[in-house]
Image (cartoon, rainbow over the protein chains, first blue to last red):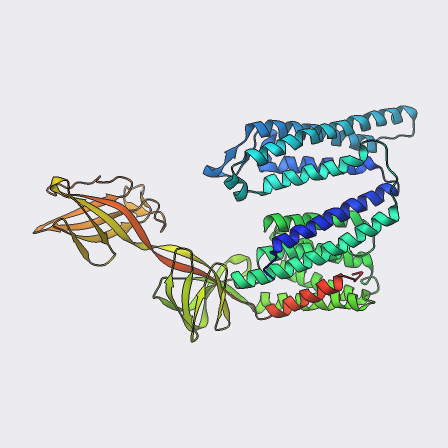
Length: 258
Length: 292
């Protein structure tokens, strides 16, 4: 069993959960859900991650990896990431304002479309800033510092990927999507993620038993949460994408946190 | 019960159970009787999946969840977890048991004599107990007398071998290794250890102390004798030759120390661990086709 480590299985499960979430979102788009809703959601997620990054130091135009004597300061990345945070915040607020506006009157509709355009462009600008910012963090950090404190850089990379994928449908004209096919793909990927999460939990239990003498470890607790989130995502009931998102988050926590 | 067996109930119960077990959310900090809440949610989830089960796969999931919930519950209540630290050659019959939240609840008998034969810097140790001799490594725990001992790590103790250099007249230097017991001869001096400080510091009254057992700033107080003359010489690795007592025509330097190592081991007893693994296998197999 230890041939494939539990963290690798958790990573595979997270990939399946991410695919399921994307397919579910595409099915939602096909059913007529506003594509900007996903962009606003991803923007809010990006803002939350950037706020929390490095203990909120980006708000003071500061960013670094690690703590104490092993801390590596990155003022250049801090500047780019903080600008990305401002752009993401502005874009998310503009899209939220557009969503909350009343498009019944022509004037309101016009202002709504302006807010939507500004919001979308602002989020695209944020993504354009976060890509080089994350690149600076990943390329200029000492390898030891990255290995010692990988959570921040990995969270940044996941945010950039997620925001890019959420913004993709807002670029250009909407393409026709078959709702039934994508929903079926989402269901299969969700099932695969749930099975892989449970297999990863079983593997983590064996790893803990073999090395530490007990299967009740922090790693197996994290994967228990992911496995239960997988079971919660399986039934055909309301809010499927919210449940898939929780499955993805719990799997990422297990894969990154170990 | 019909309401419990609906898809939203199963999804909500599984989600709530996920939130309760997550070590990152730490709901046990504010949730009264978190163990009881988790047991209740787990049992409700088992009942809900069993009521909802209509195919063999569904029943696999329900049965697997039941087995896992009961196994984890039993091991949490009746299993034991703790830690012990031993120096090579020393033995014990008890270990320090941890209770809820990792707090120490006291010593618990192992039921056999455990002896550590040797330990190396990587934490690899040879253990003897319950009529067996086993080698434990950081990657491999061992079972002895119904307990599993694992996660070994080498821990420096407050005793060490001191590597000393004695600079004599005419530029000669003689090197010796001084242990905790006994004396050594070098350059016409007889040297014995009085006190050893692995991590030397001074307290607010300027009294020497050691901040830890880690040899971060090693120092020692030595008893030195030459003929009828006696001195107490202070040596510290960070400041070679700092103390030169009057009448002593030699300079004693502490070049390095080699701490004696103990081994720290985690001790666990999870009687139903194989059963929990079997339950997880059932859940994984069932989830391939189940509608949960």
